[in-house]
Amino acid sequence: MDPRNAPSRPLIFGLNFVACIFFYLFYPLYVRVYRHTPAMKKTRILILALLLPAGIVCGQQDPVFSHYMFNTQTYNPGYSGMSGMITASALTRQQWVGFPGAPSTMLFNINMPFSLFGFRSGAGLLVESDKYGFSNDIDITLSYSGLFSVGTGTLGAGFSVGVLNKTVSPEWFIPSGPGHTPPAGDPLIPENDESYLALDFSAGVYYQGLNYYAGLSVTHLNQPKIKYSQTATYVSRQYYFTAGYYFQLPNPAFELVPSVFIVNDGATTQYLATGMVRYNKKIWGGVSYRISDAITGFAGIELYNGLKIGYGYDFPISEIRKGTSGSHEFVVSYSFDIGLGKSVTKYKSIRFL
Image 1 (cartoon, rainbow, N blue to C red):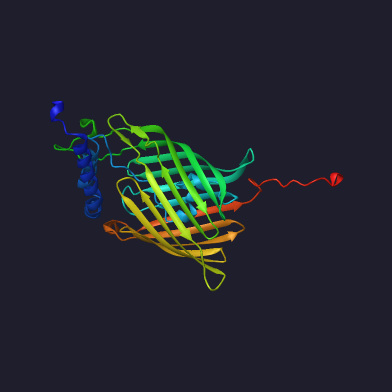
Image 2 (tube, rainbow, N blue to C red):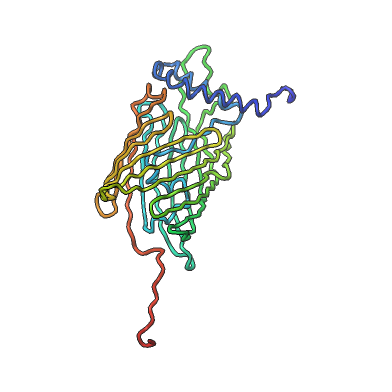
């Protein structure tokens, strides 16, 4: 092809954008009717063929969790060490149950305070696996934050460095007969497993006051480039904002905790608004609304001395509800205090009084 007649990058990006919109609007309806037919298999190939030729694939957003208020470390390194205790959490999310290729996410994170040359600090580790369609992403991240006393609260400013491994494992079903092109017949359709490893950087700030909190962070700062044999893509930056307030109700055993969570990938924005009630800081329950996407009910309890468990169910309100029974999310966390990060109190010897 004459380069002068080749489509421009803006045009290519626009075509990919239109393909993405078509996919998210109409694919769920198609699946509902034809999910177990050969035509469904052909459609998957067609969709992938539409999205791959430009070398820019529709970006997969980071998972958005219903328990975002209990999972801050995952998306904001500035939170590391903020609780003043060692906190370990495990979470699993099964999204759009019954939908073929729906996202399935598992993660483990741990963070702790410590003192670095007398300077209040925090550190964290995140291990996350996110499977969706033919893809499997594994992210291992280390984070550090500096902790500062500001006003009546604590400000954490941190960054994280990690490795992101993205793997594509296609499993094609090609009907026999004329008119059906096998993957080997099209270089833009991956036939074998492919994997790519990239460095990943994030940064964030988090402030915890006496009865409120707020955080701002950016993940994938360097927009890691992912290069496969026939195509390439990148992981777009994700911008996060969260804030919440603790209202003491007339009965001092109860608290009302409204919060908001906003995430933007440069193209789309998700808004979550949550109302949660806590009893004696041991039992909680609430409802979240994800605009044009889902309504979530969640509840949890502290069982024993820092051990907490929680469950959330997402009821979809978008068109995808016709192809799924909803989403499930479980979280377990444990916090304990061994005095890390606390300053040492010095006393004069009575010999020198």
